Length: 85
Image (cartoon, rainbow, N blue to C red; front, top):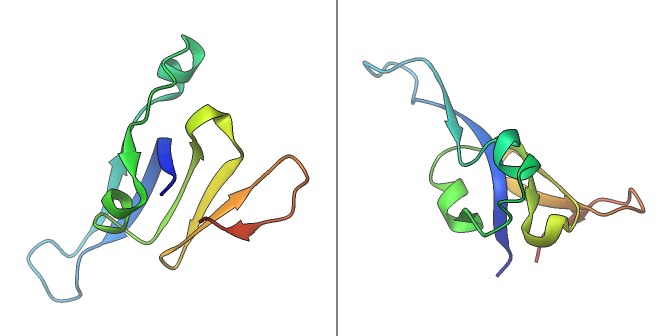
């Protein structure tokens, strides 16, 4: 399983609930990346528990992470997106 270095995932509460609002879940920050804090911050399973849309990166800065409708994609330097393993 690929571990995620930094990610922001957006989730929506079920319609009609008391918490019927958008929620932002942030795993790490750009500042952490800028000072070289490159250790894993979350797993893909952790992110799935918090939402279905977001952006981030992978451990080792191994491509961009895009979460769309619950599917986590990895976009390497080539620019060709693939479902993250």
